Length: 121
Image (cartoon, rainbow, N blue to C red; front, side, top):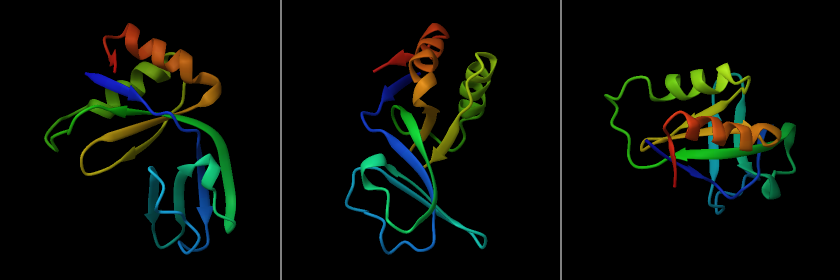
């Protein structure tokens, strides 16, 4: 399976409203529940209404469009990285999945995945 390194630095935020989120950016992930509004955005565009923010994330994208019937894609990646002592934060979209790794562990994470048969695109 091919993975692609994204060129951005990311921040995971908790915000009080979506009004200040910059949806014109290339990567903006939003989740709203009855308890919170979470935003994953490029670190250069953290909104001023962030209640909490965790900076220092890098991301990998699983290349191609994943069929909903595929089983274990994220589980396998998370397991490989967990065995290497690397935690992940995952965002899924309709087409594919994104794996966020703290920047301090990112190169090790990429090397670990490549060493386990993933192709860096």
